[in-house]
Length: 355
Ligand SMILES: Nc1ncnc2c1ncn2[C@@H]1O[C@H](COP(=O)(O)OP(=O)(O)O)[C@@H](O)[C@H]1O
Ligand SMILES: [Mg+2]
Image (cartoon, rainbow, N blue to C red; front, side):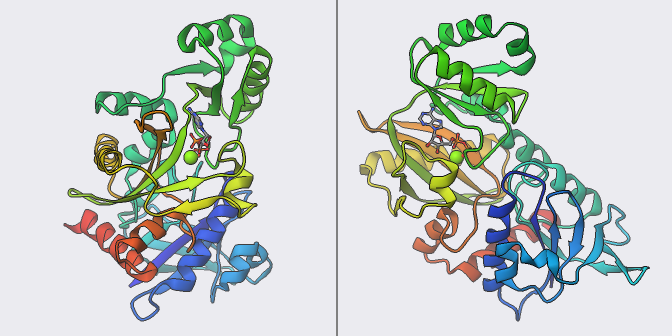
């Protein structure tokens, strides 16, 4: 089976994607898969990277190797790549794609749209579920309707902030009533542009910073709790892993805490009571289905320190996939080796397409 691994991408999570994809290249069963790796540079060039070196993928040095421009064709008769080798176009049929791309231009329905047009089965949720899950304000609406508890919120628009920041901040405080609050761009990930505000001044600074990344910004009630993550896998009958817990040593789970300092501790299972464990797994499945997901997603929650209440935070349709990431670790705990997890996800992709 020719399995296309897309990695890199345009988003602020380009580096994370490279590390996730390098783990997949290192661990996928080479007897089963003929891996085809295509890297997308930060400026959006698509390059076929033959005989991939996982270390170079992770470090970014892959771009210095001889790579060949390659396009993912929407033309169904190609069903794969058009490769521009030595000035001549060749086609390469692809059986399945694992878009190992996080954030904008990869996890947001855009790549999923191209793959859908091309008729190529792919790992992970489809166009609408990906787009709705990427936008934290749309997620809120759908999760509300599923009856799953989440933090109170206010959606702020850049145009309103530029017109009258004072009025907008009054609106925020009218809805949320007290500090601290969390500010986050609606469509970013990896904690990029996320801030905690403790007063009007830090609220204004946080909004300014967040509007840098997105024209729509979420301001949320602060939840004091453990950070709990559930891995979900499946199409029409999804299963939820046990919940895991991340205990950041920084004030919250920042970009640096996620990828730079290794001091955040990970607990599988999460240190929460049995009842909260059951609730969080049920709610993960409810969110997954409410968002219309298939394949996989990681659903993140808080479990409050005060009374172990489960509160939904966000859903990631292409979660971090390095060998030490929470998603593979949670299914590892359930008995899936990393290569077996890749197999299961590819099978689900084929099933979604061909029944
Ligand atoms: N309402 C909140 N209360 C407390 N902490 C929060 C809240 N929202 C986000 N955080 C903190 O910020 C981190 C990043 O926010 P999150 O919504 O998960 O965005 P991202 O998509 O960037 O991961 C969370 O892991 C958590 O540590
Ligand atoms: Mg998060």
